[in-house]
Length: 273
Picture 1 (cartoon, rainbow, N blue to C red):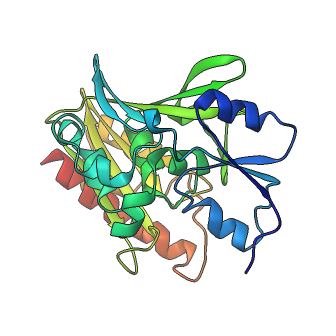
Picture 2: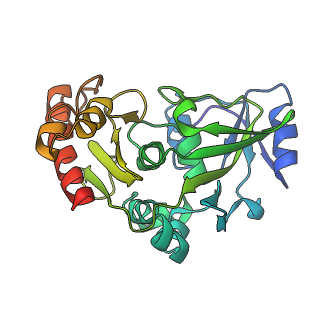
Picture 3: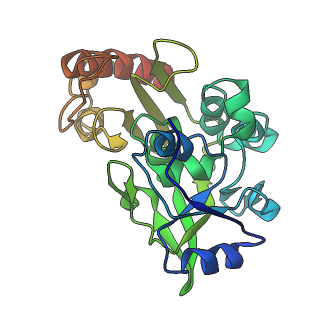
């Protein structure tokens, strides 16, 4: 299909993008475009103005910042996948980036675009939720930091204001702590039917789920069971608690609940081994 008519502007900087977003029109940011453009072609999204921030090069980086790793919002998946810093200090981010789509998608898609789009079937929001990551956003009122757990507002909705730009994602250094991301897909380049992230952080294990509700979810029942001394198999039986998985052409909600339990057990066994 053909998108509805829209205007197009190229932002020269973050401040310029904020100015364009505040123009009074229904404006959307465009980075890699892999999430927004398909919705526009189906006319499920009909912005009046597209603000292209893909040329704002100072938003593409991976660097050490104290006890955290700072990732620019326009950093492409391929750059995450090959980052030696991430491989050493937060390997689940690098490994998961290599599972996104196909090589063409990974060379164009950005982590910030995935987070801001907030698709429950995306990999990045789940990983960041398991890591207790922090978002840095900037708007006309200045800069603020937002825990990623507080940024998910609902299906394809975030807590970012319409005139704010996501500029950076901050993840903790997990180092050699155990981790795993178990993902079930029909084809290699597909969105996840279900996926599970498990990360050992300090003395606890964080578990998050992909495509088990309107947003990425923490598996609270699993984490509670683990803290009470349950083994991975017993804890994984609680993976579907508090979830609302969809039924679609890929899988029924019942099958997704089954997959969540299976993949959670596998992820926990890998992370705790």
